[in-house]
Length: 449
Image (cartoon, rainbow, N blue to C red):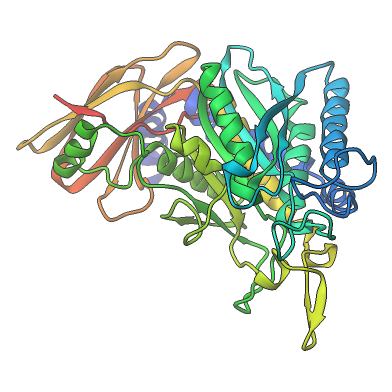
């Protein structure tokens, strides 16, 4: 009897889902990307960056071997070489902003803050961007000391090397949306590089899907005594600071206190990592950044863009923002010996697969609305998007859950009713699903009907 039921059961399951979506539950190309990331190349790049002695934003700009100038020229040369290898698929340029002592307490003299930008244009949506950033600059104990040695091997040659390596790997693929790989300067003195690029993006009307800011992705030995090459953190703010008063009022009655665009980006990274790299342990931190501290993604958040910080889970404070020295038998300083290159490879792969998934995905649905008050069901409707869309997937979760735990693919429709799912007890969202199985970010309802 059981044998007779199996084909029928399979038929029911198969008919419920679109065949194209079912067959692409995971994409083999994502595994190719993971396997293409090289720890040897990352190690070589970290050693090169640390070898410039200091990359303080206000250090030497003339020397070819020492200082921020030599570092950013080398980064640009790497992006240029990657572009040559992919038939000029990258547009590489400097983006600059002048800072003066009036701009902050950590600015000793007037200088140009120079970002190194490499743009890989999407085939279908060239003005739609997913951004991976690493910091170019380094510092020692006194951020105003721009002549002393500050190799910054982990903070943040690791994130910069990961960004360069992601460019090497992903430049071998074509994507629907654009990907930007960028080295940002001036982080240690006041997030100047991120602020400059965010303002540049706003001025040029970039449609930014999200920013993946990588700041310290190479340390596995925490000052708390924990050693882990699997844990990493994803920091994200709950809601954008640019929300309107009306949006704030709606949250009070309909929920969404932890469902802003940056938090949805964090959940996407969490889900993609668990799907393709189950050996890793992504930890979502419900905070803009570490307590009282900041990173370059914040500047994008300030202008209403989605952005998160990806970094190691267990920091070692004796290896960051410290002069190289030995005191009481303790070795201080951000040197090569404190970097685990295999771990940096893993976090680089985390970035690469998430950028690829988003860049291959269709546009996210717009104007998502929800209804079903005092009914034994939840109703959702949205504006359909163009492109190769297989359909849409509704997600929902318990109001206390950090992740989207339930989902249903509902086909190529623009509204659907979840019978028996009481609107009061869950939060809901909608994602577009491409014919290759890649999904957009989940969109939280912005209105009711």
